[in-house]
Structure formats: structure tokens, C-alpha cells
Length: 88
Image 1 (cartoon, rainbow, N blue to C red):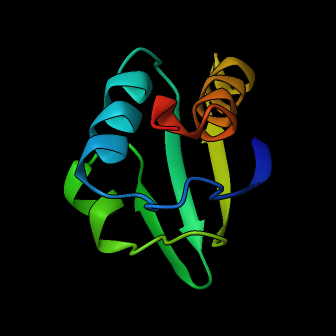
Image 2 (cartoon, rainbow, N blue to C red):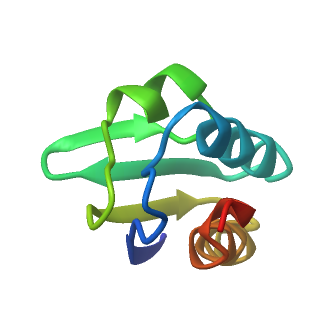
């Protein structure tokens, strides 16, 4: 299992467009990928799950992946967050 804590740094937070980018990214991996906010953990391959997290600017999330390509999956998701989902 690979885990990484990530902070939402894009001002608009995780709305529909970033959620769609996350799902598109996670679908490229075979690992099970989850995003955890406080006590809520959702499947990162579910756009509705991501949107319902309500992750706004400054929210701290934990990305968790389990499977054969878990490290690459967590790294790809971290890059999306670091690039502010190419919005800014």
C-alpha cells in the first residue's frame, strides 16, 4: 500500500472539472485507489465520490493506492494536484 498526503492548492477546490481529470487519471491504473478526507474514504475512480468529498482550497487529503502500479498511481495523482489541475 502506498499513501501520500496532498493539500488542495487550486483556489476553486475540487469541482467538476478537476474531479473528471482525477477519474481520467485513475482509470489508467489497475490499482485500487482511494481518497480520504477526515473519516470519509471514497473510490478515486468515482466522479460522484470525489465531488461529494467537498474538498475546497486548503483541504488536506490522503491518497491511498493498493495494487501492482500503486506507486505510479499515487505519483500521477500528486502531479495533478501540484499542477493545480492546469487551471491557474
